[in-house]
Image (cartoon, rainbow, N blue to C red; front, side, top):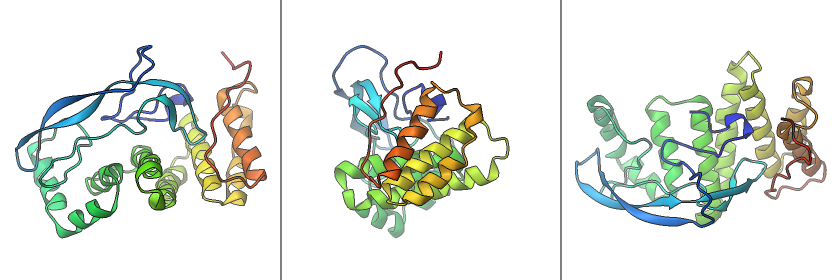
Length: 241
């Protein structure tokens, strides 16, 4: 699944889907889950309604919502759900990851979405989807463990760069990932690198009044000002249709 989604859809993962209703409130409920590691049932808090009002330049959604949504976590072994169901073969592989001292140690030191990315990577995931989860982990760290925020941003850049280097088509998704990494570089204080990425963007492919071009221009402006703070995206007054 592509969480960038042409810069038009809410950021999503298999476990984080933002509501499309007009209810301007964030509400939670409880749902029951069965832990694939030990087979035990438990209840966890889930988002039942949320509304996106805007987003930041790094694509973090803003509004009456949680960003990212909480993920279910098995209470006894700390397994974090990254999708709803698992095959028998996947469960056996997951046990070799989760039931280790390394995993338990990382759980104590990191956020839930970092652990989602950690598991996904060891289950063979790569590319945009994996980088997107590390990106979401950086949003999570801002609220819960701010000292880890830049570390997670750096990992997301590394994963996205692997995709950028391998993807030769220079597709719309390629350009979107390039823009996202430029803003991550900016927030990491790497202003020259951020502008260098934007200089590589094929702007001839981007309509002048499109949201994507506005993202590029706003990131460049903040980078030139040497401003590393997270910034809200300001939509263009006459977006392309």
